[in-house]
Image 1 (cartoon, helix red, strand yellow):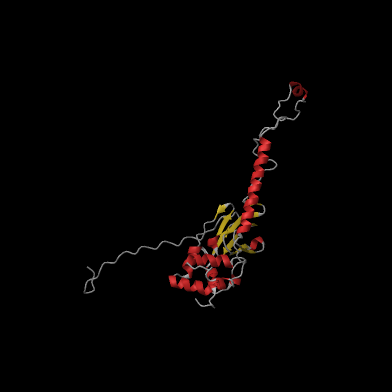
Image 2 (tube, one colour):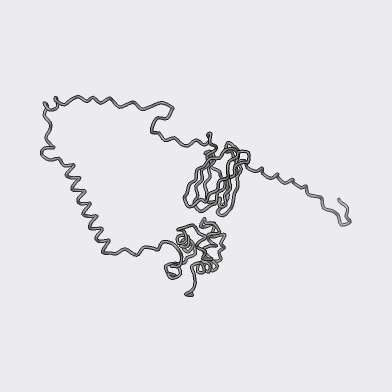
Amino acid sequence: MREDETVGQILRDARVAKGLSREILAVELKLPLRHIEAIESDDWAALPPGRPRPLARQLAARLGVDLDFHTGAFQTVPGVQELAPPDPRQERLERIVMGLLTVASVLVALWLVVPGPSLGRKPSASYLTTLPKSTLPPPPAPSTSAYPVLGELLPEAPLNDQGVLISLRSMDTCEVRLEPSPESGEPTQARTLRVSEPWRLRAKGPFTLSLDNAGVVNVEVAGVRILHGQNVGEAWSGHFDASGHWLRPPAPPAPVPVEPQPPEEEDGTQP
């Protein structure tokens, strides 16, 4: 290993040595191809904020590279530095404090459970007769109405006056673009989804939904899961009507079977 080697060069050499392509690693690790390219070229600014170190470790683990052995190179990767190993004396002190708190909790529980001499004495009959009768009303019977009551949380309607409900949740970075039909007069909406970031919005009238990394996004339109079938790093675009129904493109026509021709004789005539 050269002293001037970077993390990207180390991981690229390991990938080439194993005979793996970037596309195969992107599918196996469920990462966009551009992320693997950015890591191997040490273009850390092209990765999501806070993700360069975790993504580099994930790729190194797949290639069998121990980045702790390459401390000098890994220190150049931006991100939060790993914490120093814990101090044994600090851990021993924390265990002693936790033990004392546990013993104190047990003593308090025993003091509350075991009654004292005055607590164990039964009240006299005369005292019981002087107690006022309870004037609290009985608890109300459970509601059997089909309409919601105050305090209930109802799910959001898939389709209402504001349009069709669209729910998106991404497992990695993905560019999303919602283009309403020109007749609706609604503006185009675009957003970059991050890891585990949901986005709920509504669209009036027909619209087109486009994803540049469709394999990492769960899509629901009008309460229906959209199974677009795209993989990580693949783009997808779907057209929907005003009710949120997916307008799938028509399937290509089946090929017309060709009947086999009889063989010709040597003189060029058919038998």
